[in-house]
Image 1 (cartoon, rainbow, N blue to C red):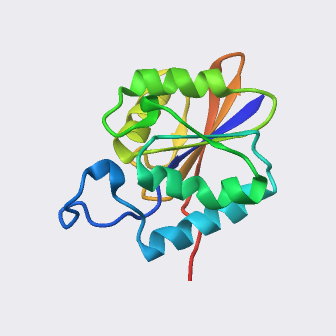
Image 2 (cartoon, one colour):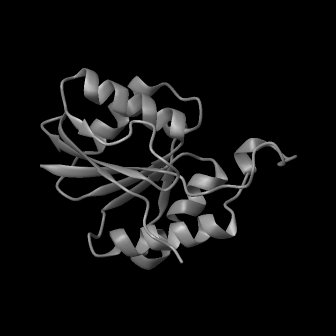
Image 3 (tube, rainbow, N blue to C red):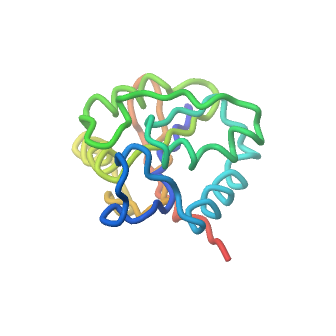
Length: 157
């Protein structure tokens, strides 16, 4: 069994106030603290791969972890905002390996992934629409999700 952690990006600047292209919208100070706390959460687990939406807020969410583990952040359009949940879930299933993986995506994509997971009969004890910096830990066995555990966003000062 392997675990794929699917993280909703940390707190980003307000969409309504952001005047540049949305894919460039960065994390807030609180979001950077959340990203650091996520790095501390996953550092000991030593994920083998970090996979992210190409949007700045997702990459920034994984950056502290990437630096701590000296891992690259792989980006894919399959996790970008507005991506099709079924295809994102297929990606998650393909990432299941012997070692943990951490992915970062957006609220809409994570919701769609979890809707597909629960439709397959897996019990999800937590919000399908995870809050920012919230995570679903998905247990993958032989290309199937067999368990889902919701992890609250880490506490920050």
